[in-house]
Length: 166
Image (cartoon, rainbow, N blue to C red):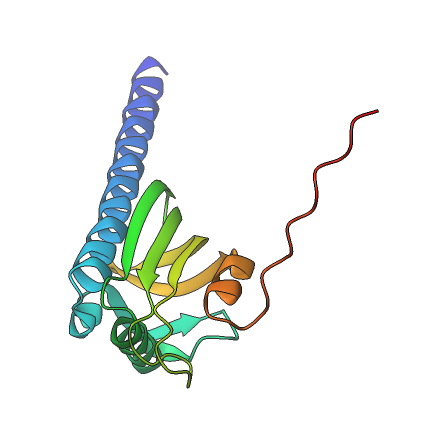
């Protein structure tokens, strides 16, 4: 009986260690993807990070691997200084979640609009599922109001006057 208990604990330790190792690998995969593709401006490197059957769950982004490549190329063409600052990455099992601050200056055409010279600064929360060492699925939450204001899609809110003191 004692041998079985020790064997069970050993198996649990191996599984926990493998799971922690997988999470660390997936976290590093995300950081490397951001640096290589976005910050070093290499959209062709997407193939190293995304599965051929990649699924994009954001309905506002083009679908699949080829759609992701086109999207990245269009962003990089519109913003010569586009940059991602990874603020936090959490990985567990085959899931990776990251908070990212995106910045850039629209000095080229983007979304059918000419260059504006406006600064862009917004945040996202990205969620990926990893399969066989590549990203297989993507979901995100985008702080879209600052981005829409910077791109001139909506007017900036008017400053509110300070309340008068009695």
